[in-house]
Image (cartoon, rainbow, N blue to C red; front, side, top):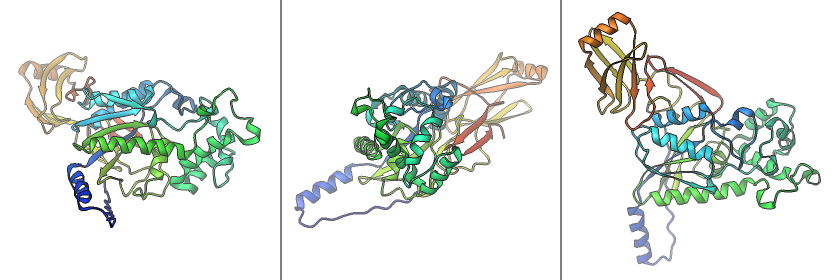
Length: 387
């Protein structure tokens, strides 16, 4: 992904020499950090159309599966640390992704600062009902007669839509004499403002980056679909003004260097860094072809490419194991089928190959698996594993 790095060095006059020297020494000691900023997997409330800010709901089967697939996409990266919000949907997403990326020994640290924006009195309510209250409060003043107005506001406000929506939740607690607000909730549990969300996200992400800068490397951070773009909207080096919708398990690579965050220069809902599932490397859409997870049998030699150091299993179409092998460090493989395996392949006329990335607990069926990922809610990319 294209990145624009703009390093601004400010020299303040009047600094003592030893102070400047210490700063230079500290700067030299810090190393670039790559933060893989990720949204959690699909949840029950996502498919029910209910709001979940501080409220939580379990990952669906799809959410669990895609979290593992996210891990396959991150395979080959070593993570020195991982963080999530203090809820199960983000924690489990991080855990499954680490497990299937070969980073299963990395512990996930959870913190309330990475939570979704708090919806207060509107937690767990149907979006269709809540939008009728909040959308007219979105600044500039909006209306809501249906989903089409939601889309119009997104396009009109661009990157400022998410903080405007968060502020609408906050303002809705007090309009019309507070008739929409839950009077049983203490003030600390009422809906947050955008500035509150941005402040705690910035505090936590800066702390995470500074800790990792001692050694550099990769860090996985899992948060939510409003808190992430709200934070991005307030970052001076984030220059994308258009609206970008964060789909479940979408990923952006953020670089922290010289005490600053740097972001991809070109970001849309269609072309944002994310993981092609099933073990492919990080790609940028549109990706019409993948040179991974494919195989062919010519005479008695099976060749192809998959994840690095993956374990391979050749089976009959009924699932009986015929032969096992291992991919090379580069992910390529080529081996002769035994006479027994070849005879059975000829007899059954069908066979399948499973690929299990190193350290992963789930396998990829290289014959039939299809990659389907809704990228940031607006575009679906479907890629056949076998080209």
